[in-house]
Amino acid sequence: MALADLVLLGFQMNKRESSRTEQYADSLHTDANRHTHTRVAELQPRRRATVIGTITSMIIRPRSGVPALEVEIQDGSGKITCIWLGQRSIYAITPGRDIEVTGMMMQSEEGWLSYNPVYRLFPNTK
Image (cartoon, rainbow, N blue to C red; front, side, top):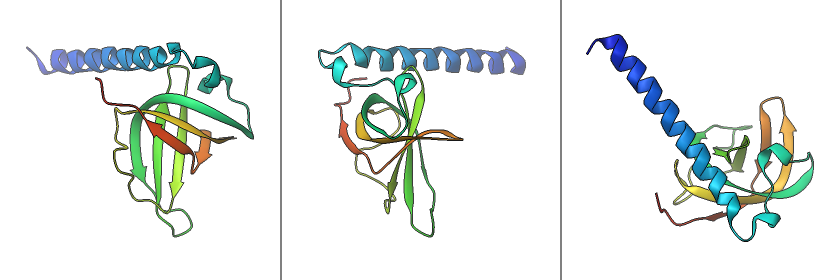
């Protein structure tokens, strides 16, 4: 197999995996309590909301000299970045994990943000 074929195959697998991740995140909203959760696409600025999704990335970035853990969450309709100030890590928060976050939602140039939201992790079932 040529290198170009392998690269294309890798791209297709990543695309398929991304699609599966979005479908799985979408299925989280079909539970009995879905009326208490808001999809990222339906968020309103400066309102408190609860979002369920899958952690897609994490980064530690200093903000005003203070460490901050930034976690990107995808719910199938969009993504939100949750920022925990003063944290370098939070036990069990890892990419691929399902999470529910509740907090004040803000919209910035980069997208949706929530600072120091309350969170609940779902058991790993993948």
